[in-house]
Length: 225
Image 1 (cartoon, rainbow, N blue to C red):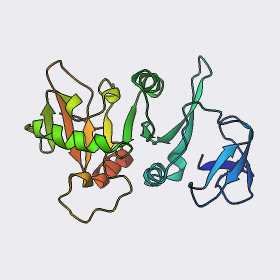
Image 2: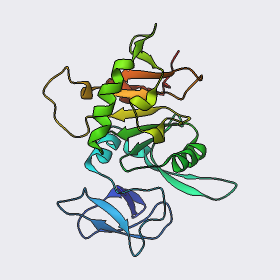
Image 3: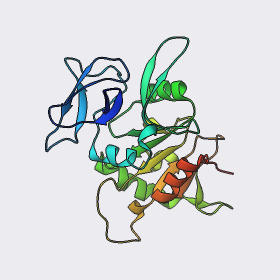
């Protein structure tokens, strides 16, 4: 976790610090080293939220594009009491989840059902084959009447199968933390796969990083029309 409560204030981890988990109230200890990004960890248990994953530099860099007040927002289901920590929740009520590790389609569907109004941003650099598959499948993109929006009959030729049935927009980041000198490199852009609206085709939007960040901050929702 990036934040713990110390003296009732949200605080980032510093060496030797002790804090309290804002989700479950248990004690957190600061983990500060040279391999992993500084973070808070539960003392004696892995985490109070089974959906939480260890953050990479990519994960933390994406979160830092948004207000600290929006980061690590605890959601609670009023009926079941189930609680989870969203990576980002905007003032407009939209959840942004950054996913680096593998997530199967069943688990993905559970999270979409819980958060409802959300967008996934996926680290496309986790497996080397993902970008090479995308480049090959990108040849099947067809232009639409909307600039930057493309249709594709076979999205499985471009994207991992676990994300094809998503009910919310899924944004793929194939650049990660890499520095790319060529402005023409396709990895400089983001690619948003929209939920399938019909049986014949899927829609993919080409986005710049800053335009996506701006649209999230302003509360604009990604649309295909």
